[in-house]
Amino acid sequence: MANSVSQDAISTILANPSPDSSSDLPDIIVQVLDLKLTGNRYTFNASDGKMKLRAIFPSNMSSDIMTGSVQNKGLVKILDYTLNDIPNKSEKYLIVTKCEVVSSALETEIKTGEPDIVLKKPKLEHEVKNEANTDLAGIVLKPKQEMVSKSAAQIVHEQRENMAPLARMAMTRRVHPLVSLNPYQGNWTIKVRLTSKGNMRTYKNARGEGCVFNVELTDEDGTQIQATMFNEAARKFYEKFQLGKVYYISRGTLKVANKQFKTVKNDYEMTLNDNSVVEEASDEEAFIPETKFNFVPIDQLGPYVNGRELVDIIGVVQSVTAVSNIKRKIDNENIPKRDMIVADETKKTVVVSLWNELANNVGQELFDLADKSPIVAIKSLKVSDFQGVSLSTLGKSTVMINPDVSEAKKLRSWYDSEGKGSSMANIGMGLSPSRSGARSMYTDRISLSDITSNQSLGDEKPAFFSIKAFVSLIRPEQAMWYCGCKTCNKKVTEAIGSGYWCEGCQKNDEECNLRYIMVSKISDTRGEAWVSAFNEEAEKIVGCSAGELDKLKSELGDIDGYQQKLKEATWIPHLFRVSVTQNEYNNEKRQRITVRAVAPIDFAEESRYLLEDIKKMRGSH
Image (cartoon, rainbow, N blue to C red; front, side, top):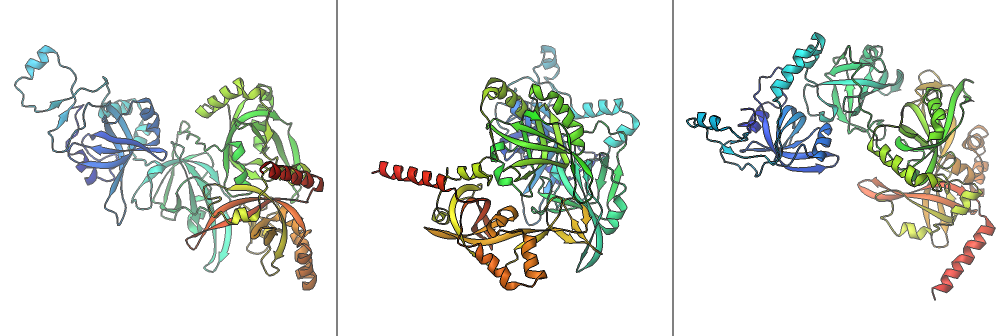
């Protein structure tokens, strides 16, 4: 019967953990129990009246759940699924990849051991008479709401009849969504669009020489994964993978992603070898993956400054500059650039730099629309410390104007009713080591002992403070600098032959820049602490660049002069803007204090601060 709870549905699933499209399986209709939101996905218990199995709905069903189409104690027909079977664990997990609603919530839960429970539509009088002699022994339950739906078989049959032959062939291929993949699965096939492709690069290590390249793949749900190919696989697939095309991929392997190097939000990363299968999917112009955003409010961009993690933002465009050309030092090539100022509900603004084609194409469109204050959503932005905090697009960045997302509608409503007349402040104010930045360092001044005595600081998110202190020790034997890319400042490695390879820019360069990464001890009147300082901040502390200090130590061989230079940098008062985070080392959490800005003492402002402090002390007595 079309609307019945399937008999032994859970047993059928357990016996067929990963069915293909040709599997001759009966209809699988289960009752949804214990429906709840877990993380960003909805989980439930799938019940057939005898057995239960923990399950998870696909992300595209979230809207149906929130609108009430899918309800607790309701019935769903499972059309496609994968059963996770993790070694050394007895529990199995059902990942539903496709399903349809059969009924809204029933009045009661189907209990274990009861006879099959059948959902019936009300019968007409003559139908009741015709069934009087049948031996059907079902318990009739009415749903809370009437719902009429086609069976899965009807829908699939009608779709196939209306499809072209190539589309019907594609439908017979069982495709797994990326969210359902894990390292413990066997055979799988994914259908993805190539949304980013890196350059082929060479490497050299203890095991020999080789080549490697990476791609980023996006499926129809907008889920992304990074795939890596080495040596023979890299040579085999490099030309085959073309940016923007859609592919069927199988026979790859998955492992837990290295958080330090991953470029997409996925717990796993994929490796394709020489035996992997990559097949281009023809006539797939309509396969457009949904762009998924993880928006960061503008006032929370500080912790991402100069970090590896990219951010997504949404905001109202305040202004857009004309396009300009920046001459790149390494090859004198002119790179188009356009800046715009974006604001959000935090009443903070940030400068976003659009580079290359984005400056010319989308940038021109934004320039023309600037007087209408369009909403812009941007994915994959680099956060730098230029002007305190600023954002820059990369080759993989995506810019959407007036996107059809709930956040855009909410932001538009806020801006039209309140934000348009509000006073906005740049997020970089307070982080800049300029005079104005130094003045802001008095707003949340604390002592070092306030940080070191509270070991929970920075546990959930970075905490920012201002400190007046002296540099008391810089160890001369430490590795104080690294070789950085002349374009993006990231660490480079020695390339095969000559020069340096930059992973971020995906290119070789004949030279590199030395950049500080310095650890020093700072002290104030109440305590001391070890802090890390990066290039710009360390230059202000030491008084020279890392290249100049290296020349003094290495080329001139003046070890005494090198040590004297570091000694001269100590016991000079500074104002420090620092962040406090928690790092784990040998299973033990430790505080990490990082210098974000350095400024000299402004004695007039320092005097005003001390007078205010004295007034507060008098007022408390």
